[in-house]
Length: 404
Ligand SMILES: Cc1cc2nc3c(=O)[nH]c(=O)nc-3n(C[C@H](O)[C@H](O)[C@H](O)COP(=O)(O)OP(=O)(O)OC[C@H]3O[C@@H](n4cnc5c(N)ncnc54)[C@H](O)[C@@H]3O)c2cc1C
Image (tube, rainbow, N blue to C red):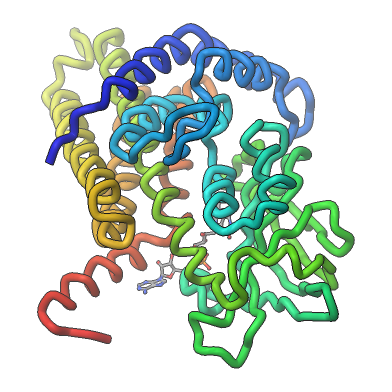
């Protein structure tokens, strides 16, 4: 196992660090102020467009792409890992680099399964950062962590599909620039459970697509919106099918592998930033006659946080290395393992940092409470912890001849 960075990734890391320090971190309060002043939770602050222009000019654009493009020669998972970790330090960094979910996963689907026409129409503007996208799988009526439960119906009518369904937690759908969505629904109800669903491209402006409301996360209305969406007699050409009919489940699996590891890499960055904040606060506040950092319990928090972050990083690098060397399928157990271990670790570290900041840690003056909420989300989004533990356990049991 060799976790060394290539020289190209090392150079990108240096450039990204400078971009974060010089432009992104100073832009955070400006972004919040512009968002607040607009009075619209889905407003796109002007400073974000400035950051995007600057990121492109510094060659820090679309870094998530695994294959060669006009932006990068393509980065392996191992090379992308430390870069994604750095972007996880700031909630506005991923979008500034055009590396944010759910667009990255959707761009990967379009790259892997899109026709030339689909790629030209939707992938090109996504790669340019001109539009945004959504992914519609989860439904309020069914346990959606089991994707075979999806009920949304996609019926054939001549050269069209007609779609009826009810989705929720659709990230990005609240953003005015969200132009396209990938919808998962049932095309072949009589097929075996894993061949019933297909994925279809649905422009958000299609008649019958109705955004009902935003769902708040612990009371936060994330700028991109996590929306409840009704699809009523939505008609799109059959040419909007992604991949083959009945292939929706397989595409969902292909999409979530890289997406999960990217989330974990960013979570490690978020935990690192929280630990830095914890240490700074511990050394700058005095209570009961000395700095808080003199307290044994505080030192224990700091030590445990360092140990846990480094453990999580090694586990994540191992999964990245396995994906690069043996393929995403061979790394299934390791991807599920980090999806369980890393957000929980990050939430624990951020929780300690919140505690160290006293009441301040819970308010908007520090990024900790929001960061905590995000890590808590990741114990559910892209598959709940229990479902990933189930996957790890099944692979272990299979080694002993057990099949269910
Ligand atoms: C902020 C946020 C953003 C999201 N963005 C998107 C998006 O963009 N697009 C999209 O389609 N979805 C999105 N989701 C939805 C997310 O992927 C689902 O919430 C998740 O997959 C779980 O599905 P569910 O909510 O239907 O829970 P259910 O499937 O009803 O499961 C409920 C609980 O049951 C337990 N459980 C389930 N299976 C097992 C098992 N095998 N063993 C033991 N316990 C089990 C788990 O504790 C689980 O949390 C988002 C969610 C959040 C919170």
